[in-house]
Length: 191
Length: 191
Image 1 (cartoon, rainbow over the protein chains, first blue to last red):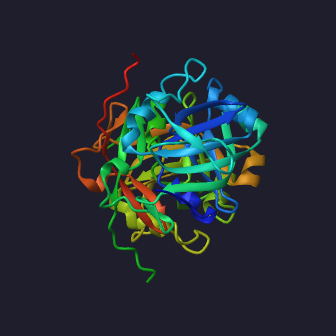
Image 2 (image 1 turned 135 degrees about the vertical axis):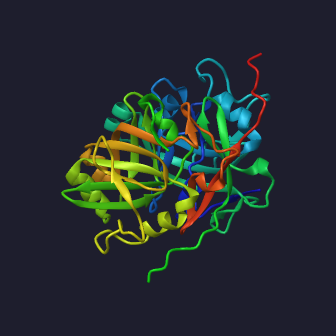
Image 3 (image 1 turned 135 degrees about the horizontal axis):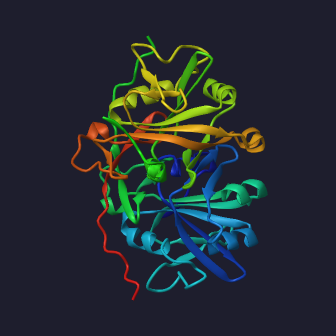
């Protein structure tokens, strides 16, 4: 079930490097794309960075509307994640009964895509130089949400949960790894 | 064994969101730190982005020397990855017999840390505004290397390999996931 995540914990939703779905809405038009290239940028206030190609319709909507959502898709929607990354929203509606469904984010109105396990609602921080030179967009997180089956008490809990709820990590060309289990190791002593 | 990775494939070393070790050298001083916040930025020429706190000695070395390496640590060096992220190189030498070892990268001279499974040698792309405002550093990849036990033919191959060679993905507070196996799914048809 979707639960709010405190903003001072929300960068942990992206710490482990999942592929994300970037979604946006403006003036009645919605779109969603897949992005392997995103990361947290700061803790307080929480910020994120994401690379958005100039040709993407999602970028156009973000530039117009000023808000976006980074969703963390699960293994259950690997096919959707691959598919929405394979064509432009200029060429076809992605929010259809057969493809993606979403509801408006409470804080921004940008789409929270069903089947994700976390969502970060963001307000674009305009930085025209790096947007133009590097396709690099920054955002401040204004609300965050996660599926409490796998994110509780401020951290991920994938061990022992159905594998379909694990996050996706892009390899190349529509291939993904699922995130694995927690690593056991003996910390190095200070002595 | 460490083998060169073609530059047009090197962003794939970071696509899946591993935690990295950032290392640098200047004027005989070397340092290394852990960073969960990095990502590819472009394909051609290949570029990367990484967040470097103002207090880090590694950042000082990068600003002075102009080059750095992003290494991808394996599960085998989880304790090292945690430990080099737990104190500043201003307060103690990190390249010691007991801790980390490295050799100079052929392209930059910056340290390639032993026990990583991939290394991206980078030249800093100075962007003073975002470095100051967001601690955000950009680099162009000028050489890339990977352990051919897990990265061959331009992609990762973790399935069937010893788990100690998997990449690390930061959860929080010195806890890591290992990357898991490739996801099997049926692509959505265009019809």
